Amino acid sequence: MNAITVRGLHKSYGAVSAVNGLDLEVRTGEIFALLGPNGAGKTTTVEILEGFRSRGAGDVEVLGEDPAAPSAAWRGRVGIVLQGTGEFDNLTVREIVHHFAGFYSGADDPDAVIARVGLAEKARARTHALSGGQKRRLDVALGIVGRPELLFLDEPTTGFDPEARREFWELIRDLNAGGTTILLTTHYLDEAEALAARVGVIAGGRLVEVSTPADLGGRQNALPTVRWRDPDGATRQERTATPTALVTRLAEQFGGEVPGLTITRPTLEDIYLRMISTEDPQ
Ligand SMILES: Nc1ncnc2c1ncn2[C@@H]1O[C@H](COP(=O)(O)OP(=O)(O)OP(=O)(O)O)[C@@H](O)[C@H]1O
Image (cartoon, rainbow, N blue to C red; front, side, top):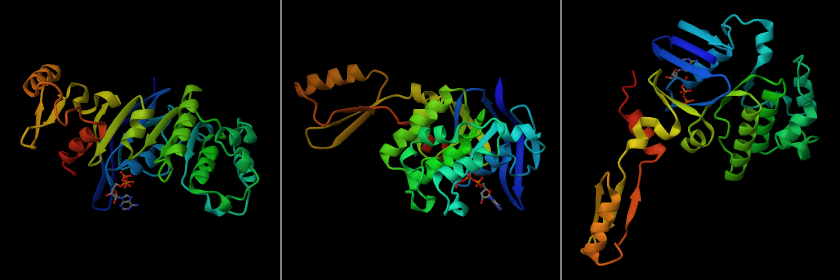
């Protein structure tokens, strides 16, 4: 079953075509990551799915309803992590989360949610006194306090330090293990790889590929590259399906250790950059 089904989505801003015939399916229960360069149409697409933006054309179904004309119950089933709650600067974390919980009939216990996002020690702090990462955790608390079936996360870990990112990933996995479907946009390839069951690449307003992170762009089948240093100091490299045979041959040639030997496969980032650089933006 799909949590999200999109067919032939179009959206233009005047002469600018932001989304240009996009198809997308997000399965119930999965973490799906949308990747794409700046201006590719990710935010526009996600805002249409959230019901915050009108579309030009196409069919969109989110949890079985059209987000352009949702029922009252639909809003409570969808969680959205917005960036920044600046207007609540003078309230405490606890006050804000309790306030938001009041919007939902089936809300979670606000104090439990605060603990879950790792803000228990800051529950009585006013939000202007929170660090960037702590503010982001508060944003997530507000997105999940209604116990959504589907959660939208737009670039959730931008500005996080490495430890905060790992902790945040744990929180996302935890939510997903509890049954929440998650649609995430990110510019971090390692984040997509760490979290998502499937990734979709948007370029020029269309979805150009969907696959598991391991298979993106045929990565699994990409040939490894063997690099080494010749006796004259020059670096040599060869792509080969049989790296062991090549290394054995080199070891014989060098009579033991091969200077500067490395064997690498393309990273997800290599594959992704190749993919979006060959896509025509329009
Ligand atoms: N409100 C708007 N008015 C006019 N043009 C817009 C508007 N919002 C977005 N656009 C344009 O639509 C295109 C897609 O923008 P969008 O914000 O969806 O991209 P994105 O993939 O989210 O980019 P980023 O990674 O930078 O957040 C861009 O060319 C952008 O300039």
